[in-house]
Length: 244
Length: 239
Image: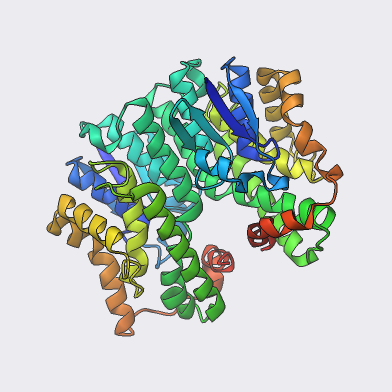
């Protein structure tokens, strides 16, 4: 049995892992874990990851969670171009510097749009407008730092070539875009970077990766998504409560 | 000019970097950046880290922010013993996995526990609603449980039988609520034994030295109002 990936393409870090594995031609078996249907809460999935989260990688009897750890593992384990996770001391340090900043400033911040517009209402909850506005300010500040400290005048976040950092970053930024808030508007440098990443990955792979999220949006627009019982999703409630 | 480390031992990740560098005999100039005096807002510090955060590293012309990046840079450059950040792919992945998880899980509740239990009420003179503090302490409790059940399990150290940078980062997070007077190890024998093992590897003297600031944080004199203003960004920790 080769590599297996447990993913839900509704999730930003899952999309980063999927894009990487597909683009680099790493063969894997895909297990879709539908978060909206609570498949991450099953006893069966707890055997895969007791933290009840995706993405997860399974390599024989080795299970690994956390998207950055998975991306790093795959880039070392499989034959992929050096540019994804460059080995020289300073480039390697810069990627980890980005990932540290990303954890504080990007992760958590860019997911709020989906929660506020779609998931909370489907649980019968309303996220206060002031929280939504505060989140927009948070996103704006993070985007400014992304441009000024990381991207600057380079083609990609780390330099002239794509790295894991670009995938992690762009997929977070795509979340509000997909769910109705265009973070690239008024930010031509970031928009150009996005285009370069998309061009590198290829239109077909890009569309395939984002289809499930767009499909989810479509179902919501057509009112075909079922309401969620809040008590069945304590982790969702916790997530909503954490929105500043 | 050799390696410079810009640190405030009030900060969890700074303590981890300090212990790592000292334990491994890495020669460095310590540049203390006192957060409670707003020194991270000076222009000279912005030259080292435009994000105005500690820890930060300066190695000749090369500047670097973010504790994990700094720890890994030091481990590679100074060729520290393998167990700190193993070459073995799977062992290293376990460290990477922990370092990623802790950033969005343990870091948040340990920082909030210190600020809500100690820094706001005692040092800044700003009371915190009991409900807020209770919720934070409940979060902390859940995180500690995850640390025990999911990461430490029956192992001596977080990622196996040997200490790694994961243990340094973890112990420093836990020392934060300890500094605030929280009972972190008292009802958790597994964590208490793990702490003893980590202290034994690090060495009693170094461990004590690294924690002088955090363990005396309740004695911090009242802050200058100008500095209080500068620290407005910590208001987000009131949640």
